[in-house]
Image 1 (tube, helix red, strand yellow):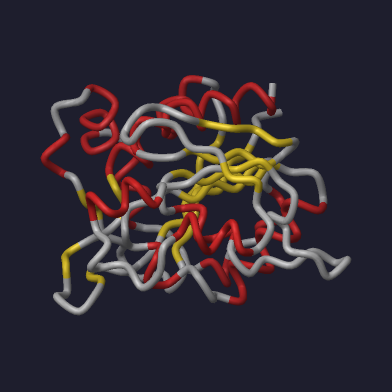
Image 2 (cartoon, one colour):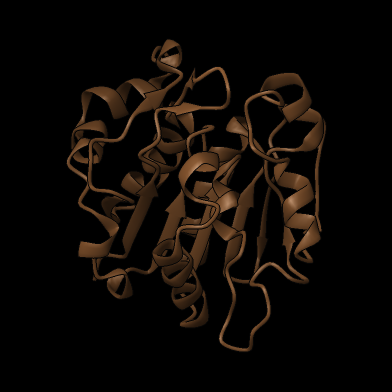
Length: 222
């Protein structure tokens, strides 16, 4: 039976006091999508509101996996992503949240998203996220009352990277927020690939880490 992956995307298209344009960062969805597709998995999308999501970093479209995503089924299916509330997340073997600045807008406090992630994790399915996507792990509490990330080895876009990229636009520093909820945080040099699996939780630091997150999710499912 085919393994099933649910990719949950943000619906935000601007962030911060200057309304910086944003969306899901193209390689952070396209590179894992390529890994899932090559593995023969069923790949479905959901978004928080059900409205058409946005893509950022279209200037990177000459990358082969990015181009295939844009011109193949990936972007076409992502645009039709149903509302998360209308999706049965319990049928999926893995849930994956790509980054871009957009998740920093609508994912820190979304109650349904937190419920889906907690339930996915507790039934032993895989939870994955990359770059700013791990903001989806913030404020997720398990049935024992502890934060999901408490004591877990994870990574995300780092404070050092944010200081170079979008410090003036984001509402808070992601590395700091994750650490404050008990995460054991691991970083590498800015913009270099860094992905970590701790049990059924898989995270990546930045766009260069997206492929590695996809590979780790595929490896765990196989």
